[in-house]
Length: 315
View 1 (tube, rainbow, N blue to C red):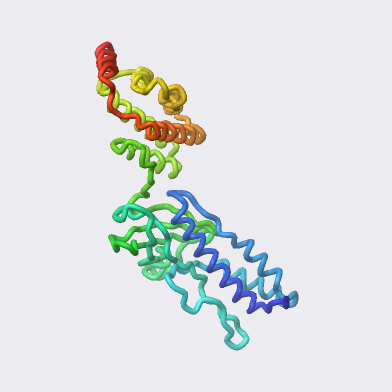
View 2 (view 1 turned 60 degrees about the vertical axis):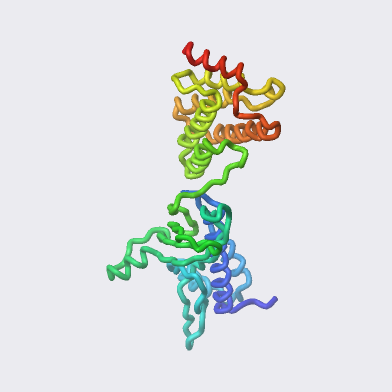
């Protein structure tokens, strides 16, 4: 393979970086949650291009590439004249493009994942620069980018995202409406929103809130099934629920009493335990899956309902 000139190298660098930034933006929107991020492998791309530059033109390429890296990304929904061009002895480098493409997102109207197309994309710092007529302070190539998407299937109201760029990372720092988390269909519909909120809080880095919502989910489901509304200790409430389960399945179903106690201990100690959240979430899910498999009714058998009422009166 013949070595590239510095202009050929810059053209390839521009092409590759536009592809990488665009792909990682799509991953951020589709796969990550609030306050999570992705890192674009710019250094890997640079190294692969540099290895193929003619040795005599390497220094010139590095100077131009450094200039390219330091420039602001320009959000765009289509490519228009990106790359490098030759004008006399000068190499003209257009601003690097952050290409915003279709993304597969959850549509609350359609009730599932759908393809969303971009409607609007702006860098707020650039907009402020245009209005103020002065330089904006910048650190680590920091940018704040606003995006709007619309479901291609139903054409409902646009959904918005705020993406921050810091050097080679993209952070998801806002979205409207709030992220929707699909939960297993066999979770009880009346309490499922607490389970969903637990996952949203945890994914957004609020681990303690996630633990709290899981405990609320357990308690509200158990209170409804047992019919207990009054004040009662958590362990007694969970014990009352256990008595409603068929004896044949009770012993190998994950214990709500065990996980309620663990969640309560973490909350009382303000312990943001990531492992506890994942374990509790998995075991609660398993518990309801077993209920589904064996078609365990939420209705309490008459004799057990009487026992539950008696327990409530005693307390």
